[in-house]
Length: 388
Image 1: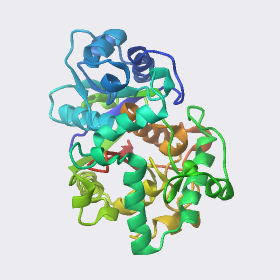
Image 2 (image 1 turned 90 degrees about the vertical axis):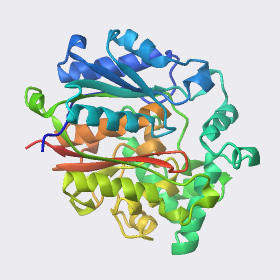
Image 3 (image 1 turned 135 degrees about the horizontal axis):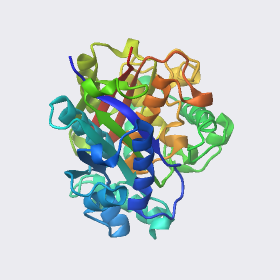
Image 4 (image 1 turned 90 degrees about the horizontal axis):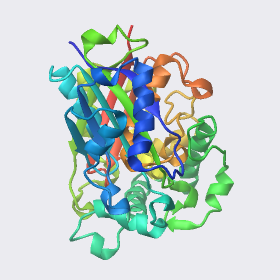
């Protein structure tokens, strides 16, 4: 079956930027086009992700603005917003458009600024993030996302005996990986003791269990199957699954299971003709350490109840049998909301091309990315393969 391929990737550093949104996106987009050897005149559409520009910076209708700064005015542009799954959903739609023959060359990516450079402090940005929670039932109660994922994780701990020390091992692993990633927000290692000594944010999470607010942008070039071989080192998109879940959190029958991730993964694996056991590594949405534990089980990388154990035992390390988040994940690489989904795709592409430097997963041929939005109510799972 013909399938879309990623032929170019670009990404800024994640951290603190004083560059305006559209210029930050342009930096990643032009890098992706250059990597692909694609001229702006070859691009037929832009699928663009930004979640919080309107609330954080009074900057809306960003699609045409972003296109103009990349030199793409005149082509169709669509902006996507799905909380933290924003650019993963843009990627899914770009892949589907290419697979359907609607476009042959699509630029897809996202951008966000979440640090005080927006003029909003941490408390204000936390409230803005919380707008992805249920407006009537959760926001008035003051529920923010550290609390949301703390609830999911506490339930997992109740069901399976997962411990805070196991969660700390997730943070230590991802900071170690981030130390090898020159574009990561946090390029330094930490220890289990340092994580456990940190201040409590939302039980069981301490400060180092939580990802940072970050600024940054990422982009990839997606082309039709029959064009892919004319580019250097194309990476095939073998499958993309997308599922939604029940909102609010109180109505979830099994909150620790993150069913949308399981549904999206099942769809992606079916399209790819390969299951979890065929994945050489994974990039998952570890906005909190507990979120990585839940994701590792939802994707079938480890058995239910074993996500924390696997991290503590080193199984999810770069040299383990199920490497997870060699980029450093959201935890260390950073989390500019609208850029996170395609940043995962960039990471997959670099490893599958053998271009990930010190953090390279040896002999990687197939990988999976998991990006969620809100309380996992939107989840997109993508499987990519090195082209033979």
